[in-house]
Length: 326
Ligand code: HEM
Image (cartoon, rainbow, N blue to C red; front, side, top):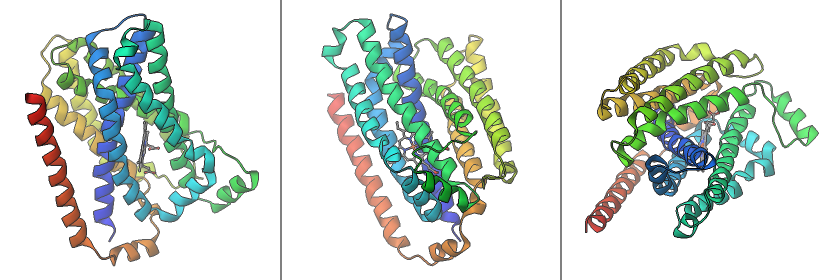
């Protein structure tokens, strides 16, 4: 059974989604605040945390990358190869976006005009939206039911895959980002503008729901994505969305944010979304590959590496904490 790998993919992808959400919406907030000619403590705290958050988000992308390759090997590699240089463009885009974030928080940039700083943040945002779009496009191409679609793509030498689900899916992920970032701000900038955070989170949930509905409507028979197969996860997702909307709704009405409840609902949102996403395509796992995966060796080594890696990360956190406390 490939179930443990699917479970690991769901959990690690949820972590990636949470961190990427913080990066996308945080960069958007800094850019929009700057374009409107000002600055505020939410933008300042975001600027401070964004380079670290991007590093963590990219690192958290590596784990699901490994599991996607194990589970959907032929599909994933085919899509990567067909998109070719277009796909590789995410690397320079990430480098430019990363440096733009560091530049944005530097003392040098602090002396620039608000417009120049907004331009730097907008550049970073454009890079990250491009990367998000690229992952969605790759996913849509990988999930084509008929291999003839891939052959036609290759024949045309196309560097783009056009698919009606891409734009609504991008809207969904941007909405999720706006729903996730406010939780980070509750910790990075405690007590700052809670009602504004609530408005952003609630707006994000609405956009995400609209994007998801449009993407589901645009999914056609040419794709292996089966929305109905994820019914159980979708109920969980609806419950997590409702819980998060209620928690932020209370803040919008003037109550103090219940950080624990908001954190639990946000994590539940990411996990159920990742679970639903996987359930919709699980039928595409090649049975021959599943058998090979079932007989794969090395679990003790994996568990040992996991424990060692976890201990090393924990030790780094202890060292950093001690250093910053001083
Ligand atoms: C700013 C940078 C990034 C953004 C905004 C971003 C965004 C996204 C989005 C929106 C998806 C969902 C695609 C979909 O469901 O259609 C996704 C999937 C994914 N991302 Fe990222 N990502 C970024 C960087 C990375 C990096 C650097 C890695 C790898 C090291 C990575 C690994 C993955 C993996 C493995 C998936 C799942 C692919 C699949 O299931 O087919 N991401 N990313």
